[in-house]
Image (cartoon, rainbow, N blue to C red; front, side):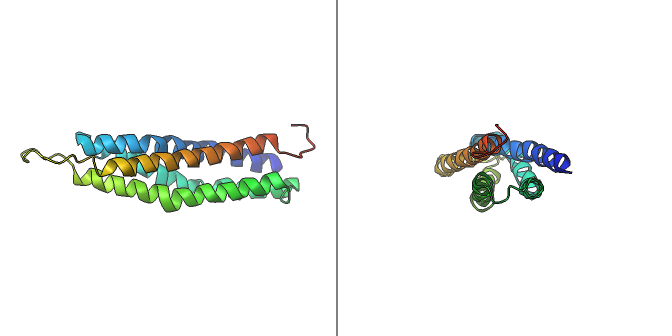
Length: 163
């Protein structure tokens, strides 16, 4: 049973969290391109990927806790730190990154080029650049949190397995 739980935990982590990290990392640049005239198509897709896989990603800590319970390591410091970092990453995604993406997506949809519109004198990207830069930074922090969790899962400080 432990091998099944661990397998599901790792697969969901790779598929869900991996997809979020890639799509979220691409999002700020694509949003600026969308606001610059390319339209919100790719940006909207990247946001849907992040949102959808965020829901699927809930299975990562669920199966991780189940695996930890089977292995009897729920009280180990490396697992507790991993769970705390996972919680921080989830909060960052749900409370800051996804809402930031929605804001940039709204700007991209607002600036969809229309065929007969007069030339704009203002730079539509001016308002979006600071938000995109902040979002890129926060996405980087999200990615680093997950990298630390992966390292903790592999190294497992204090483990007696020799890994």
